[in-house]
Image (cartoon, rainbow, N blue to C red; front, side, top):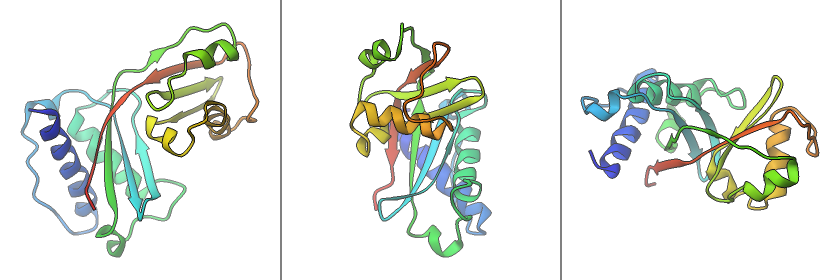
Length: 183
């Protein structure tokens, strides 16, 4: 299965999973072997270029097809930032699927040292301090291209002040391959 074929299959699975819940089932073929291997995905929904839902998995803990289906339904119906997707919205909602590489823990002395490791436009980041945890997909760099602002918003997302730092902060990075429906 080529990368393009994989992306097309994942997009069809995501849309079909949402359609099924809305009573608009779509035919889909999930027999390809790659779809049964473990995978971690995020499904992002947009309307007119604006975020409408985004839910995902940071670790590959279930088959790729199942991960996409469940994350698509969660993005459409359980993202706490939005009301559940309606049947009327379904037709003009665009689906994007991001397939994550395994996250790699970074070693650094302090925040300044960490900032030198950051690769804008490439890295997805998982920020963790105690029970505070957040992530931004690499796509977030498109709207937050400044490294300092990117990290400040990531800390806010974790429920911490934007200038927070502590020696026990842990940070991992990952990359994604993404596919988006043409609209």
